[in-house]
Image (cartoon, rainbow, N blue to C red; front, side, top):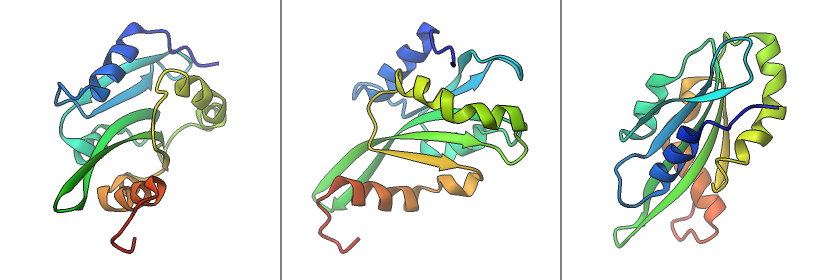
Length: 144
């Protein structure tokens, strides 16, 4: 089991979900290579592009992001995305624990529209994620 008891994790989660702040992502990392305790590494307001820059190729991390997109010129939507990052140089034993630990992370980062497994930073480009969000949202009038 992953330890997600750090109160800063829930505070950051509430911050990302709040309409009153600019914070639109958070990143969780393990305290050390041998630890199963997760800690809040960083938060930001620069969207998925800024989040991608924070990811370490040698780590497994979890991220939560608010993504805003327009269905047409009249409407904007905000949806939440859970990201499971397994860097290309992540150690084998850490990779093996991710599927079990993801369930624990989901108990804290509860509300999201889609889950995005990411192995390369390009997996977190905004446009393909928006396409997935539109499909998950059900009502799409622009042929996507």
